[in-house]
Each structure stands twice: as structure tokens, then as C-alpha cells.
Length: 116
Image (cartoon, rainbow, N blue to C red; front, side, top):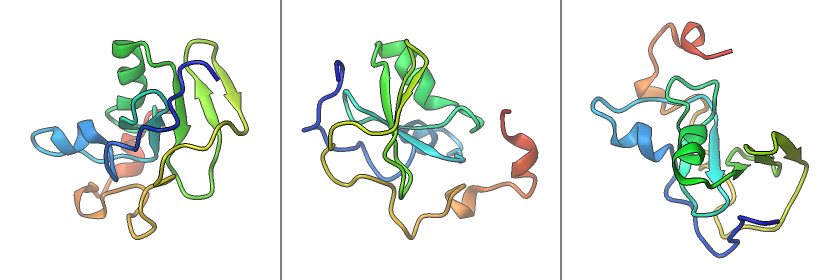
């Protein structure tokens, strides 16, 4: 799969951009850039950082960073792949981390803040 570097570990356990924001943000689900390991939040999340990363860098392939999910998405081709190459560990967010999360950052009305 072009644009995938299986040797690159993920950038961290959560959305790098939400974590770096002031104040820090929250996410619904996480996506991992298959080219550089950047963890960003999905397009349902307020920040939509995974697709913003793809647009800014040209890194078009992401993999779900959710437990039990192994699918890849190609932003350029708008194509989903049920599986792909194994990526460097860890393969998903920590099991102890809530989704959406982080739990302590979630506003009470978080479901109304999701993008549809």
C-alpha cells in the first residue's frame, strides 16, 4: 500500500492536535496516519484533525486507532480497505482510555457537538 510506513510508531495515545490545543480538546474516535504515525481525531470529532493532517501533509492513508478495528482509509481515493499491512505497536489507543475522550475533557453536551 503506497504511502504506508509500517515501521513508524504512533505519535501518542490520543489526538496530538487536541492535546496541544489551548485549552486541550476532545475526540470521538482516533485515526493513525499510516505514513508518519500522527494520531488525529476523526471527522465526527469537533477538531477533525486526522483529515486536516492528510490535507496539510499529503499523507492520504490512515488506519483506525480504535481497539478491534483494522481498517484503512484513503482520503484521496475515498476508499476503505478492510485490512492492510501490520503497523508498529501499539495498534490502538489504550483500553483504559475512554471513547469519546479523554473523559475529563468531555462537555456534557458532547453528542450535540459531533459533526455528522
